[in-house]
Image 1: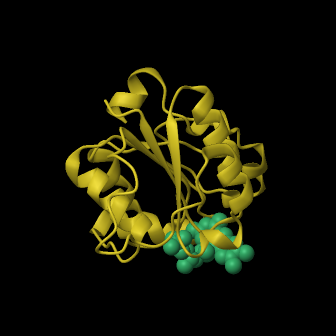
Image 2: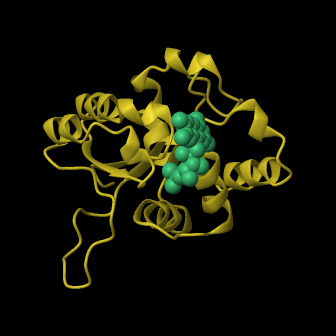
Length: 178
Ligand SMILES: Cc1cc2nc3c(=O)[nH]c(=O)nc-3n(C[C@H](O)[C@H](O)[C@H](O)COP(=O)(O)O)c2cc1C
């Protein structure tokens, strides 16, 4: 299995802690690359990401003449994952680099961990329940950012401050199976 872990940050305040997730993952032996959506960059501390991983966050697709920037990851962690990006993944929309990386992982059977930060107000959207079920059935491992609980995503509120970066890190069988 590839030793590379792609940590994908979407546009929610928890993206400010993506370097902490990268740091925790490195301690578990992963070689980490941080990928961010354009919205996530409103929160991501690019200097801290570079300090921890040795590389700036990847936001844009590579140029056509540019070689692949890192090997196919053995696992993809999406943390924080927005309502927008989760719905896009469930429907196969890949309109930015981060979305493409996660769609390709899902399509090719690469294990995926998703830490959703989605408020109560959005939880009742008519597409949401079906999209969560579709991704769960496809093998995605959901981790609740307020408790670390696996497999039972819930709406987030202020409890997200309790998030422990260790919760997002795939270890043992979770690393291989998602
Ligand atoms: C201050 C602020 C906080 C936000 N927090 C969240 C959030 O916690 N969860 C979420 O799904 N969207 C949140 N959003 C909205 C997303 O940033 C927005 O839907 C964006 O288009 C997501 O893009 P992305 O999925 O490509 O990162 C927030 C927006 C702002 C301005």
